[in-house]
Length: 217
Image (tube, rainbow, N blue to C red):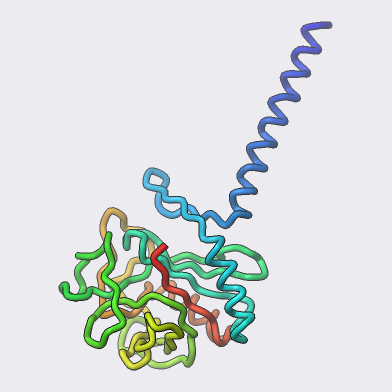
């Protein structure tokens, strides 16, 4: 009888322990911790403060209240660092690869895959940090021949539109993570793979005035 009670007690303990583990995993997801990279090279980043500020910004500035895009240039360019966040679902619905500017390095190389050069200056060939509003759909010479105008909303990216910084696709950008290799660097535009751009294009056709926020966390 004592042995039976011990076995039942042990089973209940293990069951509760498994439940606690599951609850911990759910809690981590609710805290908006994104897991980036392959299992052996995973990086955990908590973007919850950015999601919260982005939601407040969209409300204050009459922007799209359903979706927004976060790009984290502090991550190695071989990782997925372009995130489409759904405000209503409180979760990232898509992540993909994205290029950044080459700066004073060779176009198409991966020289700054670990340390991005940042600038808002003309002819710098750099990416610019800050909040953007995604505007009109246009024609691109790259990728699937579609681009979207980006209007910089801060001092750090105020020249973006005049610098012809747009969201577009580029055949050189992989659909999958390539770490420890990097993503080829352009002249400052956030460029994604052709496959990803097809999905992003469909989303932006029905979601106007979407916020894009480029950060270095």
